[in-house]
Image (cartoon, rainbow, N blue to C red; front, side, top):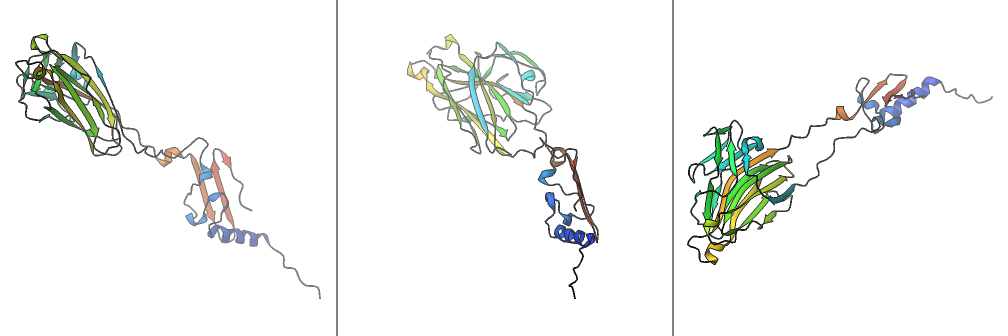
Length: 296
């Protein structure tokens, strides 16, 4: 008797395909485990040119430069994120931008020098949106601290958003030393001592400068610390009647807009449908306008 050959019916193949699908071996990376109505996007379903959101670089930035200040600076126009000026009426006096959360701290004194109101020598500062004094013009005052090693310290918030700080300063018979550093150490510190007034007579006025610091941190919740001190006191070196020192006049801050968040739905322009029935399995997907044929 001739052996009977069992005929493989089409539905049997479909059943086998269904088992493969249930085991997670579906072609094209589409798994039937996602359920008959749950889309499952595979890597092959990405539209050409689309990409996932980029990972953070993990590093901060800090760069600085010294320039000559303009004859007049409008801190209200320049300090779009925040600004502060010191010494308008007295050494203890300051005015700052109104109706914003302060980002530039009040200064803290470094060393043992006594703070006093400076008599000018820096840029002319004007403003129109501050508290407690709403507006001011023709202000050349600042806060002066004499003696080597004495000076000021400021702190500002730092995170992955880029910010630019401008410090309006000047020196009398002294060399200024500036240091800036991000608290998480994600960028090299910035130092400079190029602002120098070597005269030993205060009748010769002061040497003015503006430091521009652009910075960001690798992570949120960090700070930028800035110190301004007298490196060399030429008043003492040349036997002046008064110590040389540094003056802080004003500071402004600009802040870049936060980068928009890219979501997966914006990066992926593909749709997929997965359906499975007791006797058949169908896998259809559209990716970049190409429709896959159903599984055999």
